Length: 201
Image (cartoon, rainbow, N blue to C red; front, side):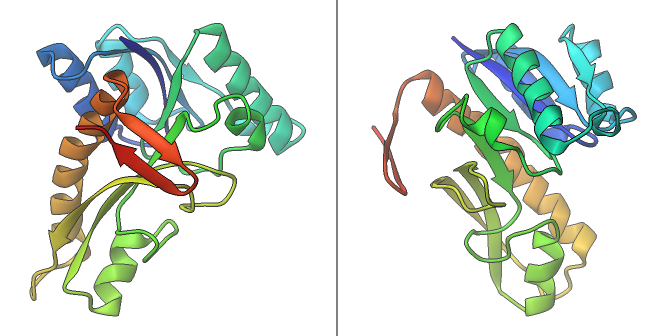
């Protein structure tokens, strides 16, 4: 069983998908802490309802981004977290955390990287006119949406899609893929070779 620390900034629907997978037994993991940079993030309430430690760490109370990231790292290490899971965490994670968890920080992006990186991946794909977009689970590094890709799922773009309708199908795909990737980790199936990540079958 792997010990997870989950970072969020908002509603926490992917956090809930991970919690649900643990409850039904398809994910051999324990979430030992949920941390948000937003005090009103609903994901904190989701964690509390499930009996999970939920912590708000306010970036505004630190003199620098480095100090803030040190606080995140200290919380994760105090809870003996083995893997850090970003689930709608809308800040660039600092090297203070990344260096403490090499190839053990995961991120989820709502597009098929390297296409449409950044905070508006769904809108950017729709505006560009692609016929297929999707989701990407990858290891995080010090640049937004750049780290080695672990898994991707394609999502068709319909002619009458709006940002909201496409986002709904994107989220459905996320809720399936993220727990699946975490289970691969629990089963020690991932092999990282540079930028390439292999999944043992």
